[in-house]
Image (cartoon, rainbow, N blue to C red; front, side, top):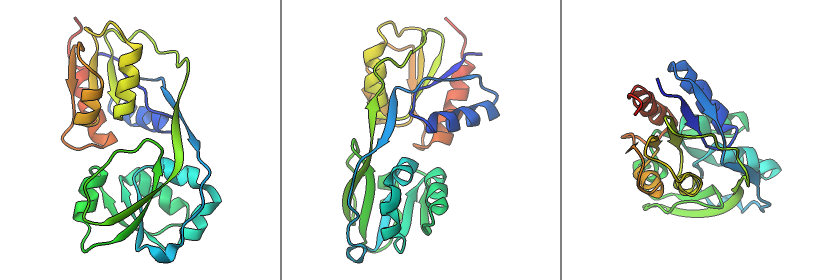
Length: 219
């Protein structure tokens, strides 16, 4: 069985590694980025119908400013984000199992949503009025200590991670990638032994895919 390499930032890397071990995998964690808070000023909650949270990092990094928005109900992408929001004293009204665009399409009516977001965020189509404010950023770790990836399966959780991985790895022909989305897969470039994405862009689905790839024979 191949080993699994997880390159997402902490604490997500440890959460994914724990989930991978529960699937019988042998994971290694080597984050390529570190998450840090960005100074921000809370907006007037009266302007919004709710909060959009697409990452638990937003909750962890928002700090004391989150209290000013506590009356707004949360639409969260993923159970981990929802759990972080509840732990911070927020009320979660909807949880999406896919990506942000899928969650937004499922929300009825037209809402005014405040998105507590990362500095590098994707664009998504929405029928709602979404205003984003940056509360965290993921910065490159200058020397992440990436191991030799030949014979490994690498879990790629974002397009930025795909770009960084591609920049760090020259010899790719014996490495399989499990990318969380088609965009993340495309960001990894070409030359890998195999690149696959799950039907659902979630950590759980990604690791289930990685488990299947880890069963593939070594070249």
